[in-house]
Length: 370
Image (cartoon, rainbow, N blue to C red; front, side, top):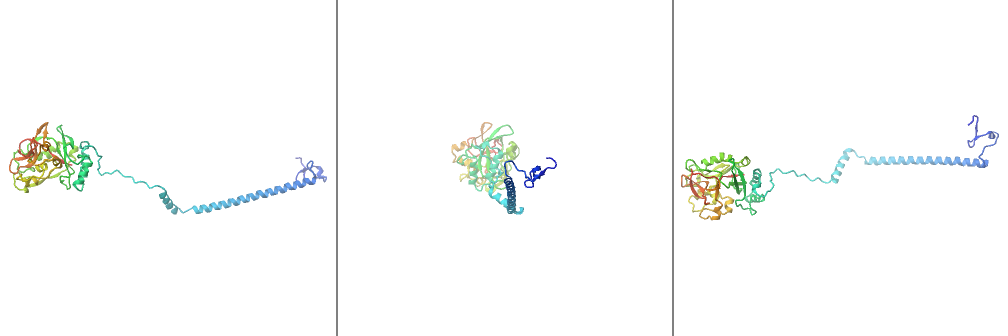
């Protein structure tokens, strides 16, 4: 634009010298009046548009202000002091979240996995089962536990097949068999869970080197050996589980009254006459002494063992035992009250009440409890 240019006062367009001479400039083909009318309309439209835009801006500001305050109100309503919100959140979580199942800890009560036979259990497991049987409140409950662990036949009977092998320190392997449950009294109170006896002789020894029965079982050489060197023949895992029990015996020798029966505490012991045959009748002159020494174990009852005059050959066959592959007689702890030299023994034919001189070497089939 050249210096000195001039502009129209109505529309603001640059003008030439004609305007200066009183002639207003105009676009070609438009009358001057019409031109200025259009200019005014354009200006008015621009003003209206400006007002409209301004109104829109004010409206937007108003909406924003309302939204902000509405949001602020909402936030204020939703905002709760933390001390109140936390318990409510915990309550909602407690309602919505499923209750967790309590985790059952593995019981350490000594329960043992049930196996198919006595042989399959370890001595530690059998001892644990014995403790469970010992804790029973009755002989019936004890039997149910024994059946549940397959320690008996399915009907609860014992027939001599409930056995477990034991390797002795001399290298030989012999079987032991279950003969009863919940039968013997423990030295420290309560009942022993399981009673075993050896199915075979572990040695052949005399009862007393003196050849007498004076002092009975309590003072015998064989009792001393069984609870020392005899016990040491057993494997450590068995020795550690054997319980001490109380055994009643004629501990005098020659006698005529039951008052001679006293108790001993033993880990290994021999069977008494009545523990094999059951209660003795009138046919036994010294029956009061014999019957005070104990009661019949389940195994002998199940195979129908009874005093010799009532025995049948089937029952006697269960009594025949061996040592080193040969049939042998075996000791009982019962002294013969009418003789000063004899103890009872089971013969090679199975009869249970033969007398034998105390210094004769006879088979040894000890018993023990878990």
